[in-house]
Figure: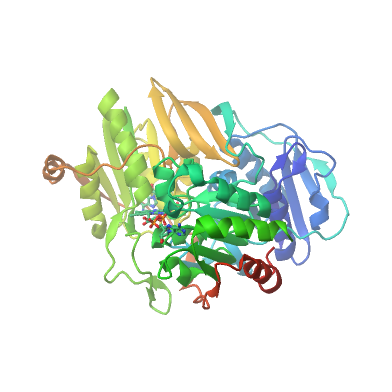
Length: 311
Length: 246
Ligand SMILES: Cc1cc2nc3c(=O)[nH]c(=O)nc-3n(C[C@H](O)[C@H](O)[C@H](O)COP(=O)(O)OP(=O)(O)OC[C@H]3O[C@@H](n4cnc5c(N)ncnc54)[C@H](O)[C@@H]3O)c2cc1C
Ligand SMILES: Nc1ncnc2c1ncn2[C@@H]1O[C@H](COP(=O)(O)O)[C@@H](O)[C@H]1O
């Protein structure tokens, strides 16, 4: 089965989500017919060969408009006769992939979390409260994978062959005026974070977030918050997780002073391990947790931070 | 300005989710349906604000059967000018998008606004697909939208930050938190909604490309292991040795 993956790069190297997409494609293509597609700067093979992908198509121009990238991906898919096209389910991938699906008359499955084989894919629905098995009825499948669902699998240190690829992608119609980074402290963006420390109204006020940040720092985690905390302006909106905020899937989610309302759980219940710290033993969050401490965050968090630093 | 807002019906956020028909269909019994929150709070309200400031009209479009009419009336009560319902039970996002594109291609809408995703399908697919069908620019995850003449300036959520972008002419947008505040319909809105036009149109011939073969509920979590509040070291040990996560 021939698979095409679109790999986002940063300063010439494949990004983390890009390497995850490549690793995933290498596992679904039994006869290893995976071709990677990259646009813009590329240094050597950008690290893509390490995932087992042996060919990289390189489109030299730097493009960011989803209609242009979609034209590029569709053209490459046609040129390669790809039956499955895989993109990351990050914000950019979610905007490009549906366009590719329409242009190739393909079936589209967003946010795949596991593959049943062939044209059958598993994804989360109902805001993480259920999963669905989706069958593609068209000849071509376009899928995105939820970041951090499959992980990066390094196969060795081989490098991929680079072939230049060109096609007509049309004009840029969305003009970028400016970019404002959310995390100035260099931490991983929330949707891609492997560890997350999150806090709610139990923290009492924005001035108390130091203990949350200290724990996050000790763990190399990204911080998040419940919706009221975002609404009251205690924390920036982009940290709000849940049904109406960001959906995340980290390996570790530590919830501090969050009650565990159903709308909050919807955004975090796919986490691999959930730890809850709450003074109320009846807080609903304990029912969704793997580990819990019934206790006061103001006492527990500093101790936990020390215990982690002692490792 | 002439705006189109895509409005879908979604189960209330507190609904218990269960399935019938051997896991093939969502069990709607006892479920309260609402306007998909992103469509209502962000896309619809922002569209209404823009028309209040600049003049024009806000049309809503819904692909669905007659069971969608109550939520469509609510959208009219909040302030939409008129509504269209494409009368079919859609099977997947491709079908929804193609039907909306078919309806709107000759209507000359300036902006087509969608929510960022439906809270049942969570696909985030329909707006990008509409854009592709109509060959329009698409701006995803917009948190603010300002329009001046034919130029729109939008702030969008991208990986690692936000972009400030400009588009000229018609485009499709998906709305995320920050665009506007929820509006509760007032009595006058509710009364006038009863007589506002809700046009039902027949679906064009569009086939589905995917099919859900089975829904499953996640496996029940095992019991939560409680650790004493004075023993943070024990929690760290469990995370390291048992969960093998740190
Ligand atoms: C349509 C809709 C969508 C929503 N979407 C979201 C969403 O996306 N995300 C979201 O988070 N919410 C969402 N909500 C809100 C949600 O229902 C809850 O109100 C919210 O999650 C509660 O936030 P919280 O847990 O921080 O606050 P609370 O519910 O007030 O909980 C605070 C918790 O802190 C504990 N506590 C207090 N003091 C301490 C202490 N010293 N140490 C330890 N624990 C302490 C308390 O026991 C309590 O359990 C939504 C609601 C609706 C209606
Ligand atoms: N049946 C529908 N009728 C009208 N608009 C819809 C429908 N389904 C989805 N949409 C729109 O497309 C957005 C994204 O939906 P989805 O791709 O299903 O996550 C929603 O927020 C709506 O604005």
